[in-house]
Length: 339
Ligand SMILES: C[S@@+](CC[C@H](N)C(=O)[O-])C[C@H]1O[C@@H](n2cnc3c(N)ncnc32)[C@H](O)[C@@H]1O
Image 1 (cartoon, helix red, strand yellow):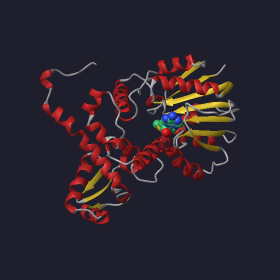
Image 2 (cartoon, helix red, strand yellow):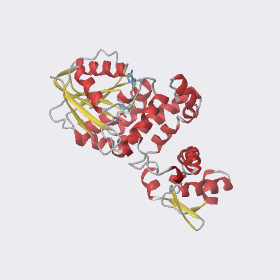
Image 3 (cartoon, protein in one colour):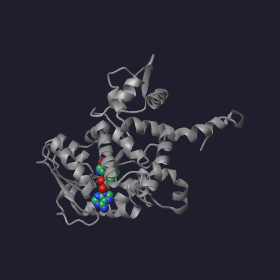
Image 4 (tube, helix red, strand yellow):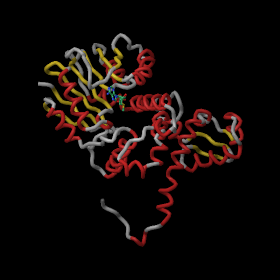
């Protein structure tokens, strides 16, 4: 890795700043959990007024809101606070682009990251409910609603725009989670039927979302293990989103084979995931961090793979013409066809 600056420019404050970085996450997480950003949306309030609204200690709330201010989460004028433009857009509940649940999902891994030395040494994963930091229902809720935040805040629109599903009738969404992308693709393609296959917990969260979108006539939720399914081989699209990153190479390859076997000739496979397609320095930093994150919090075989590697697994499973589609978001798409 290339570094700029000479040793004389270096300052221990760079280390101190790194050490303090987790405070920033804690402040964000607390703001979301206390729902301070909904309270301050469109309102200019003093710390005392916010403290009364949330039933908290005025002194602590003042110190906390000042920290939100220095992190650009809030603007302060005189002794009054209001949301910054960033917070107003992405951290106010019920807004379309809200990503607060995704931030909770990320920070639910807090205690796992706190034991990173042990994790690295032992080569193991520590799920958030295994550390006791959150319980299993909270984990699943924040995980799934967090994934849905990501879809709703832009990813779903990009996926819809990058795929031409005209003439396709039946899609299998393997590990479909909250059904976010089946919802988006079925809404955009009224002739498409989708089967979302996942475990019980995600489907419990998907059910009301499918109902809210009035797509119960196009989307079927099916509980099961995607590596052990007995579905008819009559799908002309298979979507695998957010799964390749968190599974071992052997599981990914087995899953691509399942997709191939369940698909009609001429069918389209769509992989949407965190993958290394763009190698800019900013993206390389994100990919390095994501690669460690999935080992810490998902599976010891997980990893942020090169797009070329994922394409080669598709070809090994029998697919042809892999097409890598970088998106202006964190997740990219690869499509391929069954001959
Ligand atoms: C990161 S989430 C992605 C959810 C959704 N596809 C999305 O992109 O928002 C991964 C999903 O894979 C599901 N999954 C993992 N292993 C599975 C298995 N063996 N069978 C079925 N689903 C599985 C998880 O339950 C979870 O919902």
